[in-house]
Length: 93
Image (cartoon, rainbow, N blue to C red; front, side, top):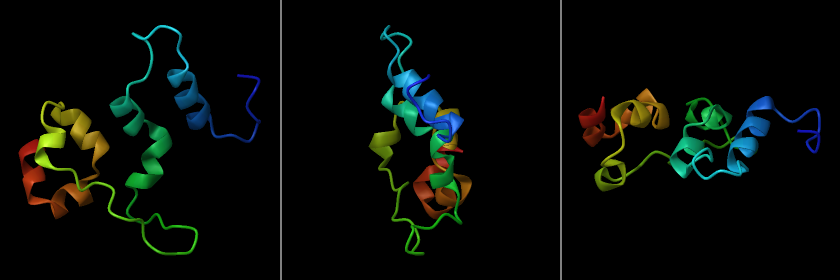
């Protein structure tokens, strides 16, 4: 897309393009957006905030929030280290 700056990561351009699909059937859902590679950095346990502090808890979902979501999607959404920290996640691995 010509409207984006050249230094914008390709993952960001891809995600925005998925949001702006004209056809709702082709448009990215919220869950698909959450597992998009653009957000992989948030799943990296070494990622820090600009001030050097660790990220706040991002993967503390309640079981009912994950019910009905395919296991492979949950595994892409929540990194292994975070699943190990939450005992109820054992049901999805």
